[in-house]
Amino acid sequence: MENFTFKNPTEIIFGKGQIQTIAERLPKGSRILVTYGGGSIKKNGVYDQVKTALDGYTWFEFSGIEPNPEFDTLMRAVQQVRDEKIDYLLSVGGGSVLDGTKFIAAAVPFEGDPWDILAKGAEVKQALPIGCVLTLPATGSESNGNSVVNRRSSHDKLPFFSPLVYPQFAVLDPTTTYTLPRRQVANGVVDAFVHTVEQYLTYPVDAKVQDRFAEGILQTLIEDGPRALEEPENYDVRANIMWSATLALNGLIGAGVPQDWATHMIGHELTALHGLDHAQTLAVVLPAVLHKQREHKRAKLIQYARRVWQLSGTDEEALIDGAIEATRRFFEQMGNPTRLRDYDLDETIIDPLVAQLEAHGFTALGEHGDITPADAKAILRLAA
Ligand code: NZQ
Ligand code: ZN
Image (cartoon, rainbow, N blue to C red; front, side, top):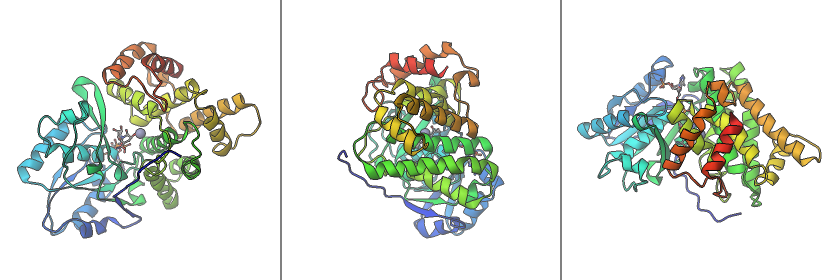
């Protein structure tokens, strides 16, 4: 096992009816900005629950944070925070609202152009405190310090990390996810699955707990992902998916192990250039990455085949092919096609996409840092 430090400061409040408890957690006398997206929370009653919980507080709202949160939109919120002297942010919605809120939190006190936080990795020295009511299990953003922001005008989709933007608390009420459209259920399950794979499917370092934990998350998603599509109001199914998605990216399974993230970095360019949903990009790129990197990942691919997909036999190539094929079938069963052509994209997109990857400095991807732009092209050709 590699050396690691692990600290996750987010308080998780999990279960039915927990939104009302946010009032116990918000500092009295604070000026709160409730951030949300395009209105799903108004249709499913979550907004009303938050409103009731905020009785007696001074609060404002900022709506319209898009999926793949837009820099320009977020900068409007930054202005509102400064104008209204807001001192606490409450994100209500999915990963995009929360990622956007993290950016707002970091941008408000930032000296200089906040775009530098994303484009130049400028250090975040201060951030406003954040609380979160999560309505879409997928990103793990509710319990990590990551955020990904989009800028349409320049076709950029860039991440930042800061320990200062972990939510102080996150309410995870699985009943809020009953209203998710099928496409978002699929996206969430595929995203959480791929987060797990990015940290598990590298090379062995004898990290037994992390491996078995990762395998447990993957098997839970394989079992309950399709059930969530068939039984949208099955509480236990929703609860298992929600907790899996948090655990997939709260730092626990990634502690002390090598990590890949090539699929995500290539996927972000696909979203920025062609507008695919985040998890659609992952469904396309991951099988191709596994295929291309099969020698580097051999030992873990075989472990994955045997322990996660319960494949048997001694023919290693057949086990690896079987595991990659099973992964592809699972994404497709959830509703996320796994080829570029399924999204009306052909090989002509590959060169410009890899040029953007290079422009963003992602020229040494993967757990060995050996996926070059030429390899990224080969991966995308395999995904065509
Ligand atoms: O905007 P509203 O009206 O709220 O609708 C949203 C949105 O249209 C809807 N939705 C959310 N909860 C709902 C609901 N509809 C009905 N019922 C509910 N309960 O779902 C749509 C998609 O929401 P979005 O927040 O975009 O989805 P998700 O949570 O999958 O977030 C995706 C974003 O997170 C980033 C992605 O790149 C993408 O920008 N990621 C963030 C990560 C992190 N912070 O750690 C890691 C990930 O790898 C990922 O990159
Ligand atoms: Zn992701």
